[in-house]
Image 1: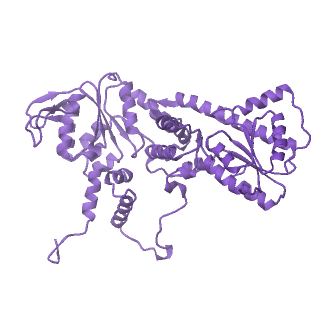
Image 2 (image 1 turned 90 degrees about the vertical axis):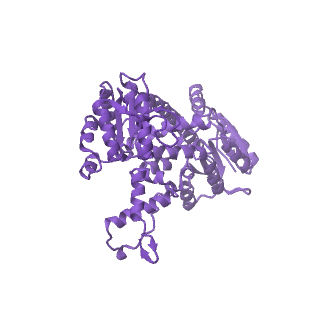
Image 3 (image 1 turned 135 degrees about the horizontal axis):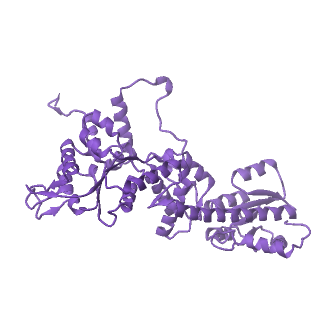
Length: 487
């Protein structure tokens, strides 16, 4: 049976403070404290006591009704009996947290045991109380919960203000590494010169390129974007320089290329290291002479464009390996901006999460307030091979799956739900040395399997261009046999 002892009258100021605290129990508005017990007469006594403390209440003897209130967001604090005929208190706790990971559940019992108390806290209960309930302790606990929600509300408000202050043309960051990128982007944007952006896949090189263009003197002119790894040479040449009618099969009319299209503005070439050497020579001519020739045309056309190139490779190493022209390398690297990976700016993850939550709350008509603590811990411990793009995909899919106000572990992709799980491998005592070629071949195959055969996605994760991936796969393919003889 519930019992809180003698009711204590509160002063007007304390009651007003409690009511104000109550207003922030739920981000959707005022939310009553839900009382759950099979004894209806005991519920009436407790309900009156809690109302005297300045909190609105909702009482029920039906666990299903309480769970429904949690599901629709009308209840964020629950006092539940541990032993009920319809449903055990721990089972109710599990279901409540599954519906809303941010709900606060206080379990109450007439039969205290240390093992039961520890098990309740481990499974997510906020507190564990013994009947008859100590009135002063209950009041302190409810005030503490209200203060905690108020603190979280104020933190969210500060995060929103901070987000606006730290957003740089669609890029979010407060880490020293990103602030340095923003500062350098502002400086180089003022000068009409070539810029090379270097960074791993998914770090946001295109966003930085857009920021530089929008900050430049030619911001009112066009920005043309081309992914050099997505096109074979013949198509890439036509895409960049244009073609005349009849230049090749399917060329039914003459079309300008991106350099003509963006004349007076900016051209952004992503994955420039994937260009073949002949295409690099033609690009060098554009940079040196500011002129292009359409495919199939002898006419030379003058263009005046700013070139921003990007790569996830070490261009100096590519030059030494003979895969990139040295003269083009020096032309592109006069101004170089390095974009840090997400693991180099872990302090930006909470800010990025808030940014993506706002974006996908609006896109999916959701009201997700944030992430549970265990989910935040998992995101901070993840290695993020796909960088910011991977984080955005995780938050986007989690927003779709989430049914409550908070994203929990169950809303994350499977590989993040089991962060400690590793791919099976041979025992250490059976390890044998293998060649680097074999390591590369095995790694590429595993990434392809993870991407379900999607070669473009696999190339992005591996940090190479799609054409390079095709080259590796062709090299590693077993030789075909003709009449029993290797061809």
